[in-house]
Image 1 (cartoon, one colour):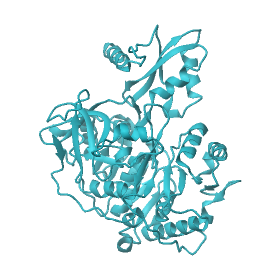
Image 2 (tube, helix red, strand yellow; image 1 turned 180 degrees about the vertical axis):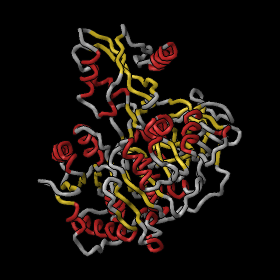
Image 3 (cartoon, one colour; image 1 turned 45 degrees about the horizontal axis):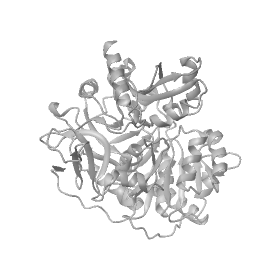
Amino acid sequence: MIFTSTKPDVEIPNTDLTSVVLHRVDEIGDKPALIDGSTGREVTYTQLRTQIDHFAAGLHQRGFGKGDVMAVFCPNCPEYAVVFLGVARVGGINTTVNSLYSPKELVHQFNDSGARFLITIPQFLDRALPAAEEAGIEEVFVLGEADGCTPFAELLANDGSAPEVDIDPKQDLVALPYSSGTTGLSKGVMLTHENLISNMVLACEMNETKADDRVVGVLPFFHIYGMVLILNLAIYRGVTLVTMPRFDLQQFLEIVQNYKITNLNLVPPLVLALAKQPIVDDYDLSSVRIIGSGAAPLGAELEAACAARLDCNIYQGYGLTEVAGASQVNIAPVPPEKQGSVGPVLPNTESKVLDTETGETLGVGEKGEVCIRGPHVMVGYLNNEEATRHCIDEDGWFHTGDIGYADEDGFFYIVDRVKELIKYKGYQVAPAELEAILVTHDAIADAAVIPSPHEEAGEVPKAFVVLKAEISEEEILEFVASQVSPHKKVRLVEIVEEIPKSASGKILRRVLVDRERERLAAD
């Protein structure tokens, strides 16, 4: 059974991303488009378009054009929109980089993406410059000033006459975010102008936006959720977006209160904080009318608790980097019997559920792998045809690796994963990458890493370790932490006699996952 939207199909603009995102500038030019939540600095819609034109012209003057890759290694700030849409304006490709990445991870993404230029901030240069040098980055731009870097302002110092570029929205890439795979190293997800435009336009059909809405950009713009459904979507809709460079609960609450934020786009750990943290009572959050949650499953009880505490509507959505954002989105107000659901599919989109053993298409209420087909499904993984063939079949269906089902009304529920990725606060962590690090230690004979349920983080990486020499659990944690980004740290260690494996030698993580659930249930 194929599930489709009850809403009519929507016409997708057949042009470039920047033109679509900025389509309301002439209408609302003096309205603040972006506000830096830390300083209060504002950029109006007219100023934003002007800066994008100047940035694009500056890139063109340096020979950066169609098909060239810009690595964007910045926290959330108003300039992120200038860079992203300026690169798109000249036909370039944005490879957005995780702010937590180590130099080794940076080198992998710079090399794999073929990035020519890099833009970052002074605070990141201790990691960015060595990685850029190793990867052969041609020029490093910095927001502000720093030795050995070209100031961002220099790119704007021109007459703003960027060339018109012939862009094929169905074929030309505009974004190259990286998504963790079960084999460890992250993979470049090739997204076209049409992919991003489709997801923005279709998402608008699900929940209404009001002219005076204000959105907070607390989720990172390098992640597909922040990139498409917060940064670009807010500008496309003509609302005001207040940016936050990093998450701090107190600052977040102050921004919501002081800027009278109406729309929150969150992940489950932030919903949990709003539902349970005592500090929330110290702030006036009455402006909030709607909360969207994504990136990881949110339990129906927590969904209801947060909505009740803030007296607002809350809904969930489901998507992946590979579908340029969302594929299913619930519609607020969500009926009580649909809480916990990620909602129906977007217009112009099809979804089906397959039996994981036979590949047979399943019906209502039957659990299997969720598959998506639509104009927002990626072209494929960069430099990895095998991985692309593995997840996009000959009929164009993207196999998500997530287990779910649809009810009789076409509302989807995500219940588990075929893939073994760990979702730590919405970040993807590949067990195989951590296992590969663990077994390099002289005292460790074998290791397996699984997700351990955690109320605040959703899941944390837990390592089961077989020893061949004496070493403490604390030493194991520190050994891994010294080599990975903070979100990839192993948080729990259990010493075991052996790692369960199949006859072919594959780690039977499901055995360990079941053992961990039994342990937690007994506690």
